[in-house]
Length: 274
Image (cartoon, rainbow, N blue to C red; front, side):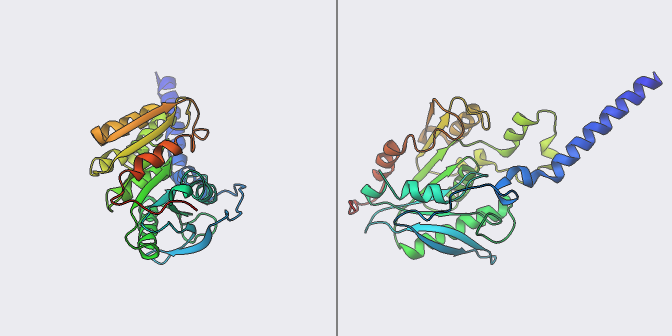
């Protein structure tokens, strides 16, 4: 019995040590782009300009901005946890968005390349609020569509619960960070140590604008079930499309449909064309 007891104690010690390591390094896992040198193309997309978005707590964020046509909307885009603003600025600054008159602002979160500070849930939500204010100043009265991929979807949902918007265009979203942790670390009590919970399921329920969710059926980073849970929390205003693809390959695959859907929610027609 004593040997068994020692064995159980050893297992508990190993388990505690592993959980402790995850707890200590959790923000490195959640925000890898802020801690690792991830290669990326930082070429400024055609038609975009590099801008600095200053937050209310003094951070300076790298951003890429393309102004909308008169009376048209702006896509405020939030990238995934290991990504960067450049591909989103290029995407929403091109077809089919640009032909329909949309502008775009895509920012690098605090702590990510080009931006100051260190990432946290509260910090990234402040980054989003500051980006929203930037759009309001640069394009007064322009309606704003909130877009996000993966972690960026959680940021878009959080901002959508605070500010008026045309809707949420979410790619590979999750309902909560706790659920993501349970998927990948099922034996770790995430509720005890998780600093950034990203309860999108609670936040999305407070919105009123339409929600379009696109998710890959072969997504092993954020399984589609988590997106379905988020859609359920949003209620009847949510539409979810689970399509062939993984966590990244789905990006942009429903842009044409999304552009039409959200353009129809704009309060007045804009001047389209180049």
